[in-house]
Image (cartoon, rainbow, N blue to C red; front, side):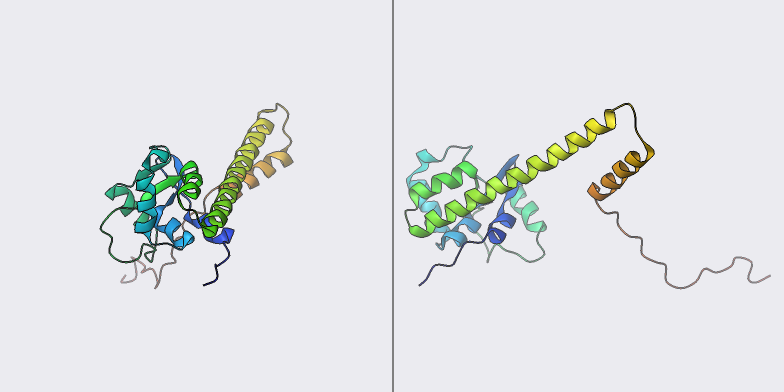
Length: 177
């Protein structure tokens, strides 16, 4: 069986923010490593000293329900008996030491690149926001610059929900007179 290439587009949507950490779930990692989830967790449990709480943690039932509600179709497979584990970037890096296959090495390299790219994107957004704030604080503002700031703010703001058009017609309250 030939190994499939690991694409960034496949990895990036599998990185979630949970408990203030960017994490990947054991179910998704097992899929990427091309092993059963129980095989991945067994390898981790045999080397549990390598996975402190800031590298890996078990999701609560509430966290699992919150994640499931974010997806229209379930990417969790069938009925689960146990909640998945969440692995931080350091936990994912540690997985390569317990899963000793060529696939594990390839997957870990791709995942580390995805985490770095995500950090760079977040950093660029923060830098842009700081630069905008700095420019706004300057005392002399031209109307054109203010218009540019407003346009940028509108582009960065979430889109408002569109109001549905009313179907039918309004009845004139005086129609019967």
